[in-house]
Length: 208
Image (cartoon, rainbow, N blue to C red; front, side, top):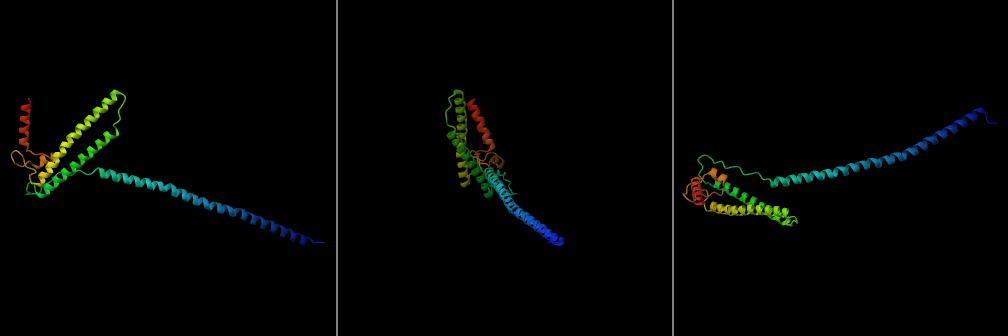
């Protein structure tokens, strides 16, 4: 017959076995949770990296656009400041006006190309006669302005030739200096202010 002590020891052993099995089961159940938690962190990092990537692209695109705008908007050439006792139409002065005339010509050519593209892209005819008339008026105005600019380009080309021949900056009529201020205001000027005013008075008298 088993004694009371043997019963107690067997009960303790069974209780210890049950406790050990419970802890093992808890560990086994807890282990997959740790494994499943690891991919969640990775996915968060991946999603964060994916979400950050387009922002960098957008930033690069905005920088590229700013650079394009900066290229289009070139700074204007400042007026020439002559040095003390500098000779009229010196080499530096000629270089300055040559640069001014070249930039002006390029700007006019770009405007003419824009007008050509505008007329080409929006050349469709409207059914409404009022819309058609307004479109024709707009096109006629643009063509008139571009025709004036075309004539101005010819004057710019002739002024560039005068710089090469050392005739730039002197009046066609009297031969005196036109002056820096007048040339800065009108780089294609061929007459001094006095001869120009006389020509304007003659034109008004003949026209009147």
